[in-house]
Length: 187
Image 1 (cartoon, rainbow, N blue to C red):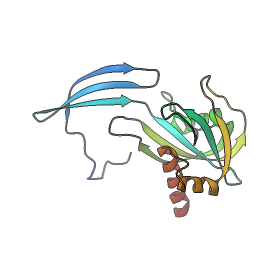
Image 2: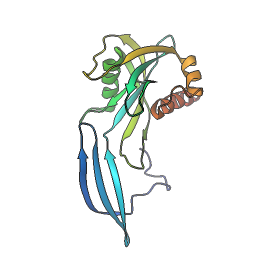
Image 3: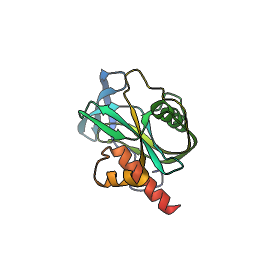
């Protein structure tokens, strides 16, 4: 994130005095940390989630390639954009190309970085990078064993209407679409 010269962003003034891992799963790690702020001790719980990418794939005929998949934390099958984790040592743009093909069966000949953001800075370090994928070629899905993904092509204008009706409800998809529309208007 580009915050180096911005006076509103500063280094954390706290001194870490203790840290312990209280949960280690396949994807997430939870740490309990104590910081010293002058004389005061501050307790925090951090979710270490790794970094991820989300892809906004748009076809030559202005359709958005979306995925419909079950999301157990909210107990719903939702419509979202393809996304996934960046593997250790992997370039984010390469992760975007890989995840797009794995989840949708589309390969992007052009991938363009749009922006990055932190998902939930109050308790997690997860950083999301958004990519625009164009010049798409149909290949084959390569789903993980536990993935259940249905690919849906939606005209961009219909997707924007769905966004306005709050029918596309994930933060990452909302940010991707909104940034794309801003980007498209400014370029």
